[in-house]
Image (cartoon, rainbow, N blue to C red; front, side, top):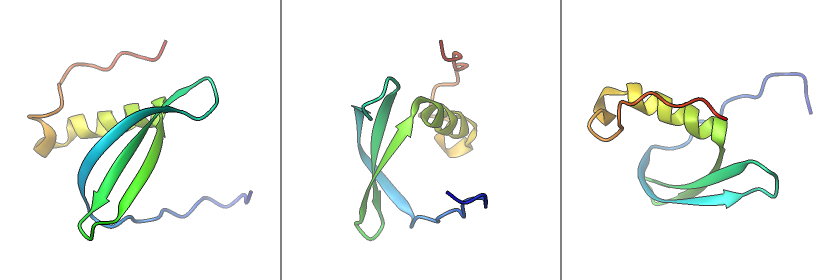
Length: 79
C-alpha cells in the first residue's frame, strides 16, 4: 500500500438506487450493499460499513432536495 493519498474516482451520474441489501463481510461489523444504477444503465454494487452509511445519511439529511424524504431526527451515536 502506498503512502500517497488515494485519488478519488468519479462515478457516472447515478440515477437510481433500486436495491439495498444487508450483508456481512465475514467480520463482526454489519454492512449494507447498495445497488446503484447510472444513466447509461451500468449497475454498481457498493458495500458500506456502518460508519460510511451513517456519513452518507448525514450528508443526505443536509441536502435540500432530499429534505422531504430523509427524517430530520438526530442520529444516535454508535454503541
